[in-house]
Image (cartoon, rainbow, N blue to C red):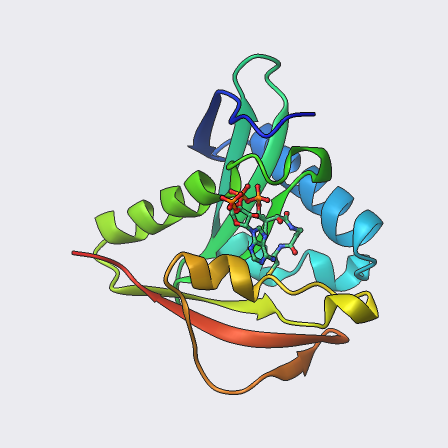
Length: 157
Ligand SMILES: CC(C)(COP(=O)(O)OP(=O)(O)OC[C@H]1O[C@@H](n2cnc3c(N)ncnc32)[C@H](O)[C@@H]1OP(=O)(O)O)[C@@H](O)C(=O)NCCC(=O)NCCS
C-alpha cells in the first residue's frame, strides 16, 4: 500500500456505536498488537473523556482514534490501525484534538508517551510527538509494564 493520504473525516464519537468503533481500534492496536492487558486498556478515564474517531471517506472504515481526558487535558489511547500508519492520518487526528482544546480555552495538552527501546521490542512514540512540538516533562518512568515519558504541547493562540 502506498504512502498517499487517503480522504478521511474526523468526528467526536457521540453515539455508543462510534465509541464502540474507537474501542475496537484500541483493542486491535494496544491489546492484539502491543500486548497490553485488557484490564488496563479500558478504564474509568474513558467515561470522562472525549473520544475522536477518524473514518476513511471511501470505505467508511474507522481506522483511527484518540482520547482526551477532559478534566486535565491529557491525551492518550492514540492509535491508527497498523496497515494505515505512515500515510499522514495521525497528524490531523491529533491536530483535531488540539483544536478542540483550543476552542474550549485550554492552554496545553499533555500525554504519557510510550518511550521504550524499539530494539528491545518496545514502542517509542516520543519522536512523533516531538516533531509536533511536544517537549519532555520530567524523567522517564515505568507504567503498565512499559517505559513512559510525559510530554507537553502548548496550544498556539
Ligand atoms: C502514533 C501513531 C498514532 C501515529 O500515526 P501515523 O498515522 O503513523 O502518523 P502519520 O502518518 O501522520 O505520521 C506523521 C509522521 O510522523 C512519523 N512518525 C510516526 N511514528 C513515529 C515515531 N514513533 N517516531 C518518529 N516519527 C514517527 C511518521 O513517519 C511520519 O513522518 P513523515 O511525515 O516524514 O512520513 C501510530 O504510529 C500508531 O497507532 N502507533 C501504535 C499505537 C501507539 O503506540 N500509540 C502511541 C501511544 S503513546
